Length: 180
Image (cartoon, rainbow, N blue to C red; front, side):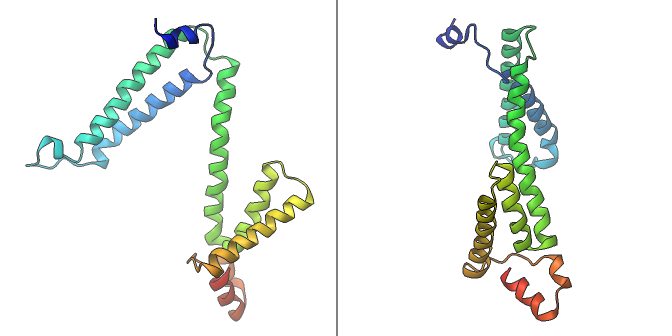
């Protein structure tokens, strides 16, 4: 019995079995897509094949992930899942929530424009993070406006204008497309 095993005796590590299962599942998906995403070239040495090293890496992920999954399943026995495992899974889901916010932002920018999308997202994220006072939401809006001015105006970052800008009168439309 190793030092780590002695330290872990009597203590559960929440989410370990769930993580191992998801890891093996993800590695199997990668392994299934490997032939479509890589090539095997004729008259090329084995170690120079485009599919060889990714195949070794993904096969290692499957093998060692499966060994970890087996070890965790044996260690936990019939005591899975418990409330702590689902609490840990919810923590992982919080990461996906924030990714969804930014995917929505990326979807909204070409439709509404950089300025309106940023002016909407910043206070919504501030609200979601718990800053609900009028002062903090105003700071979020001011921050969003400053970010747009900095990136589009001062740094001249080329961000396409939103489809919403097409409804503005001629001079306003070109001004908003160029600067906001």
